[in-house]
Every structure is written in structure tokens, then in C-alpha cells.
Image (cartoon, rainbow, N blue to C red):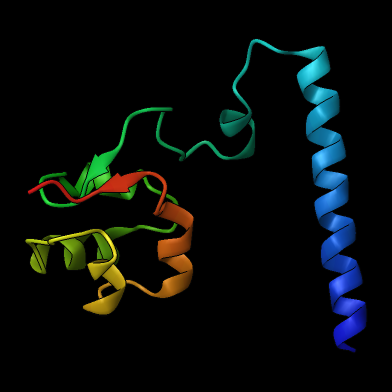
Length: 105
């Protein structure tokens, strides 16, 4: 059963990579991140979890009203990993946003 799951995951990753390469050849003007998700932050624009508004936080994937309120309530953060160590958001949600956030002091 585990082996079948790994094969399916590998196949999905392969097809996703192949599909993205084909799109980039046809349309090199649009960034790949915009094609994957409409909620991704623009390249280079990191969201500061210590000062972002609820609306700014909700633009991150997996962050809705409840998580944005919890992030704001548990401020300040010394580093962005405190979102999981303080149990503000689950690890899976953190994995989705970790490249898009920062915790400025």
C-alpha cells in the first residue's frame, strides 16, 4: 500500500514538472507562482507576521479568519518558526507559507 502511494506521488510530481516546463516554453511572460496559486505573495514581498494586518495575513495560502486572528493575538514573534512552536498554526499550514513570511524585530 505504501509503495503504491509513493508511485502516485512520484508520478504526480513528474507530471506537474513536465506540465510546468511546457507552459514556460509557451508563455514565458507569466511567473510560475501565479499559475500555481492566486493567493501567493508577489516575488520578493515577504509578509511580516509581527506587523501585517489581518487582511494581509489572509492572502497567504491556508490562512483564513481564525489563523490570522491567532497570529495577531500571539504577537510578537522572535522568529517565524514560533508560529508552530507556540502552536498558533499547524505544521502543514506553516509549510505552505514559510517562504512568504518573515518576523521582523
